[in-house]
Length: 110
Image (cartoon, rainbow, N blue to C red):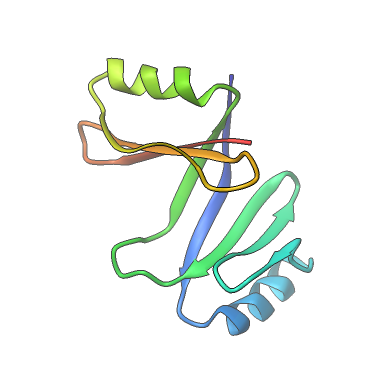
């Protein structure tokens, strides 16, 4: 089952400054605070800050129950795998594919 987009990553230049801004904007303190990721959760939506990378812009992830079958749907539809299923820690699996319009489709299974 696809649960929709529930995680959005924002690349930022200054992690500490951006943490303060997002805490005020969202009116909540981060649930994760590290040098490579600062995560805020509001109404079951994750907004994460990540160090700026010129190749990455805003990144959205579709939350899915079965990443393997969801990735297969993308492959069967003609999408190109950009990042195969990878465990990024704590059992969190991610994968990325590129569609025919060059749009990145990112999946996460928690």
